[in-house]
Length: 194
View 1 (cartoon, rainbow, N blue to C red):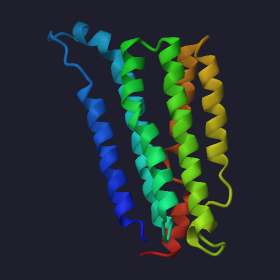
View 2: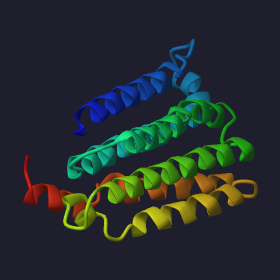
View 3: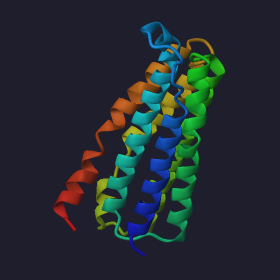
View 4: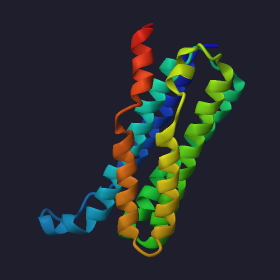
């Protein structure tokens, strides 16, 4: 089975996640800048989450481009990832509405942590399905960014109960680290164009 339908389904779910997030933004009732000020935390949490969902979409696309085939296990591990991504709108809204209070920031970090775990499970499942000479195996030999991300998420979740804004900065730092897709995957895809 090839990756085309899986990628199309995932793209659709991710598009819905982004739509839900933007629909949660409430329009102020006034027309002055003062009316926008209470919305700053909501907008900041939206921007961070939009970057995260976009980052997952981009990296997911590159990951599947490097895969030659999928099976039932990959379908389930992909759904596992989409489940955690689908919770981002809820935690984004809660965090923004409560002006980055400790518990919403911690829960936001937990969802990001679990999405990272799910992405790693998907990656490992794809590696098990392909042989050592496959493009994806060569591209994913070492996954340091995934390990570093999980460690930062875990630390930021704990830190959120003391310094929630530092936790948000750490979440943003992980997003910046992942904005550019893994260069090893891009190199392998360029070597073996469709």
